[in-house]
Length: 276
Image (cartoon, rainbow, N blue to C red):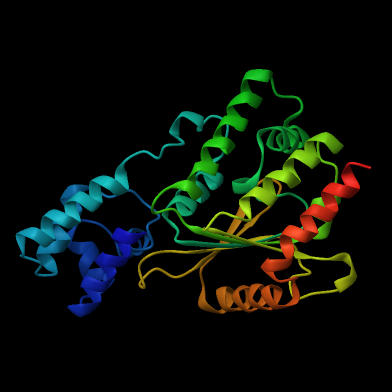
């Protein structure tokens, strides 16, 4: 996506159409569109030809773009788990890793980046109870590997709003949930995590339609992407009108939810209820 955005900016700066750019690399206008959206892999030859067309002749800039091409084509860290997950979810893992800010609203489960191992296993079992133990172990291992994203030096910030039902639903049993809530209490201290709760007593709210995630990326040329996971697929929304609606909804949620400073007390109250 970053490479595609840079190529689009260079093309538009020269006033070159997608059709003309596609002709230069023996392709079509639609191929250029897919490249600029980051939805296909990049051939180094195509990037070299496009840079010549866009009159990019600074050796340093050319080398930087070619290095970005190699990085864009490199397999993700999750490649060993490809058999466990469909392409539509692998795409999300790439977006998640590339993001600088993740805003999410959850109504049923703790966000994957904040799950304990036992809670993650219980969640995965809900949809894959028929799978063998080795497959379940690999799925749990992937989710635990995802958690390290928040602890990286350049990791994204996570701003999550949880419906109170997430904290009360005994996924995996009360002991598993108690450990999970205790983990959330610890993560409240993390500099990259901001956690809020929508209490039952608040009634209706701006995001009554269901869970969603908005990902923001480091380049201004890259639009925010809304991710909505379904049972057998997912929606990726990047049209401005769609993103604006979800951004407005999550912004209202941040106001309607209890403030982050209240979250530790809410979690402690839930823990007390779970130990009775």
